[in-house]
Image (cartoon, rainbow, N blue to C red):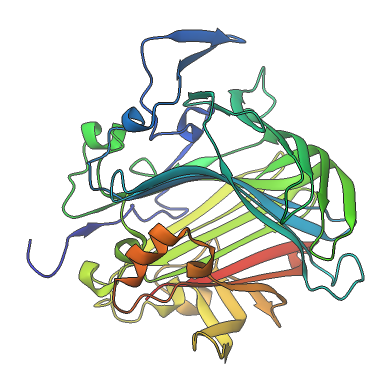
Length: 423
């Protein structure tokens, strides 16, 4: 293939050319890197194929491939300002070198230090390995301390439900943690074809779209939903915290990255906004020079009992006069440890966005971004993974996270913004 690879992005989508598909159920949100066996069960009328977890037979990916698949729930409690995310992750590095399920959980505030202790903007941040799952299917993951399940919604109550239960006992370096969450998924969508961009000349056909073994980047978005439940944990300052979520606005994202992180993207921008009735999602990544420095941008605005608006555009580094089509840092500041310049103000295109005329462009702008967390990704990785990444020249993964009270289309709410630098 030579020094460079072929990259085929998702299709452009606009109000005049809506190249996206609405979700009718949770089929597009299932785990794709799980190979079901012949044992089949039925749960509430929903067909499921399940298997006992056997690591060596977990998926159909190439032996030396690197994949990461995530199911991420972002929540924004508009009354208390308490926000965060709950994430289940499956990663596989260089085939069988390292593979694991993990549970990631973070809580932070939109208004300031949550417990008043001065311990920082992030109240809690836990990343736990899920050891020896006892039951795994494309719709369910269960171990002694964790359970994740997604199911279709009865009637017309959205596209589906997610149930999350966590009961992690106290350990030496952290306190007891428990979550019991019931999530209603409203409308969802994916950009054609199948929410996926392809690397290394992978052909875009029905066989590849259905298979998890190609080099791809895939996202499926649910910009509207609500969450009910209880969360208990020990904060970073050592305080016992318990709070309830009641019809709390959420967004949900299913992601699959079938390429090594340094090959897939050199930079990411992400944002979500939630009010009581309005949901926004923005996702953007830029490929490394090896894949033409393509920038792939997707954004959507959804209104309860209203229309879904979707914008998607992709441009290579060779495209001129395209800056208004993608996220732009309006002001930035250098981080002394990593030397990355992170945004302090940012503009992100939203639908209905004009692709031809920059003067008619519409943006979601955040001025004076509130930094709640920054971290060196390498410090969070297991040593075996860290050694692999450290062997790659020019890799300095660093994430900046922001959370603040905000406003979109006249509605007050909360926004969460993330910028990630890799190379």
